Image (tube, rainbow, N blue to C red; front, side, top):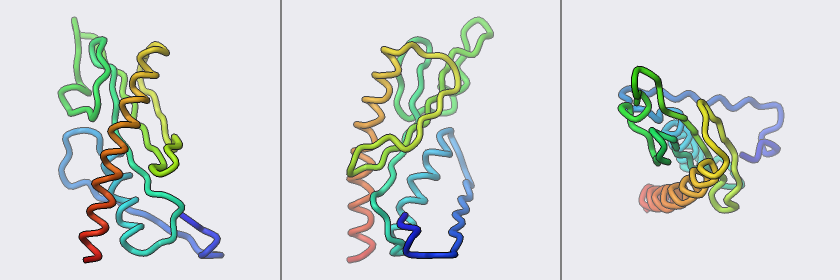
Length: 133
């Protein structure tokens, strides 16, 4: 957001998740970005977010609850990696890692997240255009 357009102002964003199947933070980021753009708040870019995971040795895009809770032999075997990108510039805005992942698979997760967020960007642009038509 271009906060310089609103000197001495605070912008609070509240997100109420009424039903969830994991990835709530990422869904909230996507919704907030879209809502701000729709409200006409000046922004440098839209933000797209997706949850990545490393589940049982496999990089997974957009975790669901069963993947977040995956266990082997009673041990949780998931790394939860929410990410967000500024979509036009493809700059990483959020990367949080809960769990363990090696550098090669983290790189795969980031690349997959970039691709998923590019798709989210297209959906966001289409939704904004449809709202304004």
